[in-house]
Image 1 (cartoon, rainbow, N blue to C red):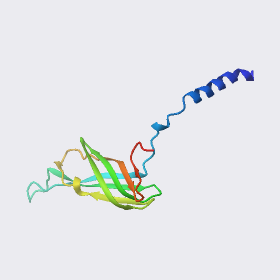
Image 2: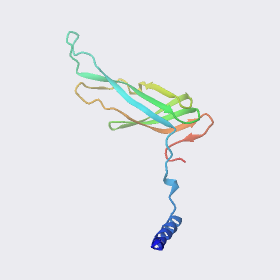
Image 3: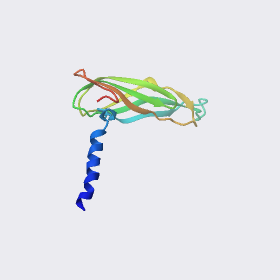
Image 4: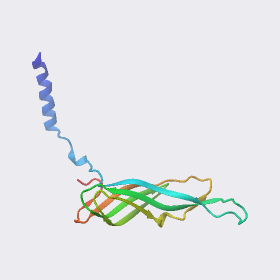
Length: 143
């Protein structure tokens, strides 16, 4: 009875040897993690000075809070930002120590005017590129 499992075990071993897992498809996790990606909206100017009614609202700066989870100091972090049908790339340059959290506001996204009853779309941010102080880099798909 024990020997009846032997052919199945042998077949599984041969299959594993003939078709090893494709390690090139594995993606490494980003060394920088986006913790927060947000735009605030504020009420625009009143229709008339005597009326407390506004028909517009304005977008504030894009806020990105991120953490360098690597063991190295990062010097450049590039984020991909998608909001509604628009895409942008934000480059943050500095000295971002290992295991530190950084909270920056990017004013390039400020001042967009929308109708008061329209939606307040929020961005989606992802890390596209990281350069470290030692000259090494990371981008999605690198090993």
